[in-house]
Length: 249
Image 1 (tube, rainbow, N blue to C red):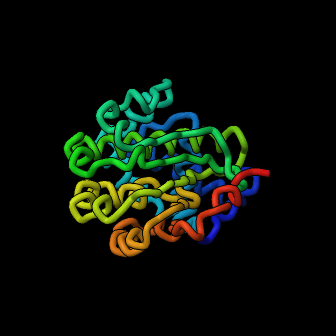
Image 2 (image 1 turned 135 degrees about the vertical axis):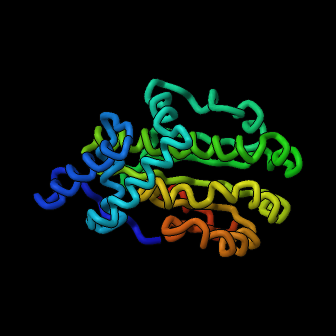
């Protein structure tokens, strides 16, 4: 995995500051409802495009239009107002199958660390039937907006860009859990991060993974985009100490 370089607003050149100011104007003009931390969101777009404003503008405008279409600004506002993951739509049906634990714990790089665990190794049929594809899509919007808002908020508090890093314990996950029908249920969600949440992810570490999971990832990663570069999938033999190596001293 290649580690993203640390960046803070204080280290921006005059030209980069001007690009960020222009990005803010572009987003507002496109109808994006910015909040007090959105400056960090826009910084992520510029980073993805290596500070080429013309390229970033295209993605900012398409993202603003998409956010209006799916109601992402309203979701972010509700999260800023204190909405908790347990109260997201359909979470009462999904939670018995998958544990998603957002934390305020930082990685050794200062990013926010999230834990994802297969809670008792979910039964595939029950999981696929607990929510519709549309509900799964909405849940993914809430996950991404939650990660985006709180990483922007932490960025503002620390003065440096913070990303979303995840640790997934895949112990017990087998072929039945990563079958084509499971992937198909999540297919519309796969390109969301790359298309509309650039530079949000730090490392994504999966431990205790079955050999088949690496094969599965090789099949779906082309649909994920640049975030695939930040993924490491470790089998059980390679997993001990992996998470501790990312923890703060």
